[in-house]
Image 1 (cartoon, rainbow, N blue to C red):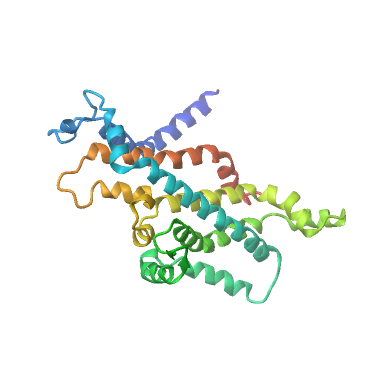
Image 2: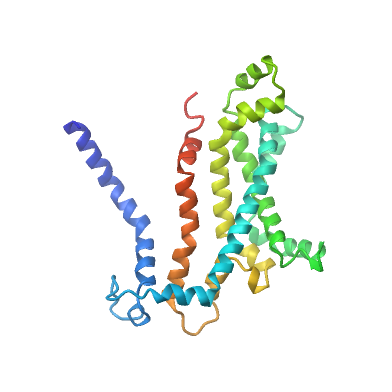
Length: 282
C-alpha cells in the first residue's frame, strides 16, 4: 500500500471513529450491565466494568420473562408478516413498474400518503376490526394471526413503493429477449426478473422484519394472553409497574433480543449492499 493510500485510510478511519463509538457505546453499556451483579448496577459512583461476572442474570431473566416463548412469538409474527407482505408486494410492485394502467401515478401517491399515518392513530380502529372478525372460538383480537395480518398490511404500502422503485431500474429488454426466445411472461419473471430483483426483495424483507420485530403499540393493543406476548412487551414488563427494577435482567433480555436482528443482517448483508446500490449505475 502506498503512503498516499495509507494516509487516506487513516484519515477515513479517524473521521469514522466518533461515529463508531457513538453506535457501539449503547451496546457496550448493555453488555456491561447485563454481566454485573445487582449491587454493582446500583453502586455509586458507577463502575464501567463488572468486578465479577454474573452469568445467572441471563438464567434469571429467561425464567422471569419466559424469554423462550416470547422469542418464538416474535420470530413467528415477524417472519410470517414479512413473508405475507412480500408475497403481495412483489407482484403489485411488478405491475406498477411494468404494466401501464390508468391512475398509476395517483396510486403511487396514495401509497406514500398512507405511510404518514402513525400506528398509534390506527390502534383503536384496528382493535375494533379484529374484535369484530370471528376466529375459532373467539375473534381475531388476542391472536398471533391478527397481529401478523396487521403488520403485513401496515408495511405493504412501503414494500410496494420501495420494490416498484427498484424494479423500474431493471431493463425491460431482458424480459423482452426471453419472450422472443419463446418464454411466457411468467417464465421470464421467474427465470430472469426475480433473480435480478433478489437484492431489492432482501432489503425490503430486512426492513419489514426489523419493523415487525421492534413494533410495540399494535402488539400491546391486540395481545392479552401472556403466552402470546412478543419480546418488546415482555421486556417492558420487567420495568413497568415495578417498585424495584432489576436493570441487569432488563439489559440481559435486551441484549438477547437484539441477536436475531444482528443474525439477519449478517446473513443478508451481501444482498442488502447490492440492493442499496441497485440502479446507481446503469
